[in-house]
Image (cartoon, rainbow, N blue to C red; front, side):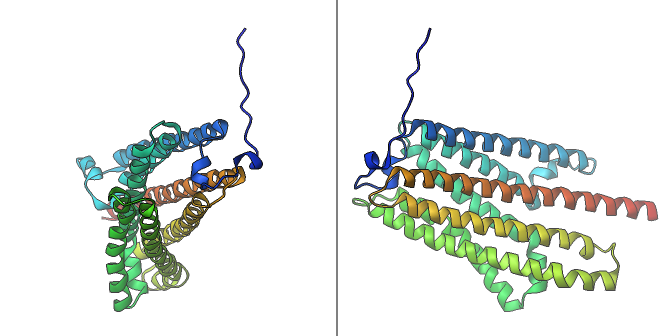
Length: 301
């Protein structure tokens, strides 16, 4: 007959220290395992979504053009799903490995790459909408901000990799995260506002002028609605990321801060999964609309 030893979670009085929340993250083994398993489940779901999208694109691609699935920029979403799964596996490894420094760096690199891919994919899919709903100066300004934001996403990783005395690396990393997060937030707000304007105003105009079957009446409203939804999801994710950073660096932390930290981590990664799911749904709808229009064109020829 085997015996098991119950693990008792430390009380706030037992865990109050002069350290930060990060110093206490691994004291409750049951909670660590729960969060780690949740990240693995999200990673597995991301891989399933990736494989399902690949199969869908393969079956709906024109004959002889299956290889274009992996080469066109419009399918950067596939890379987005790979990076999402890598981030979730990295977070799980960070909480469960003994030497988690390497896993922490890998996690930060995956997060930065995911941000860069999201910004690039959103711009690639919706830049026509942005051009329609913005003045030339605003469009050019945000085009440059898009490139700046992608570079800024690398700064937190660079701040960690550059040797710094004492805890100064933490200050530089947080400063870089604030800068990159602010730029991404501005881009997300712009994406959401421009797309919302298109949905509520431009769609009716295009339908009236060109008819309900016009590409602009079907294609761009789908893009706009999903970009609005994904941008709002990214804004939420950025809020959770800021919360993780604040709680993680809190002095004189207690176990309640640890619970809050893990809850914010779960909400952050759930938001990222929601964003990618929204973009996958957008891709599927766009492919179906495109194939339907192509079929009608053939029948009408």
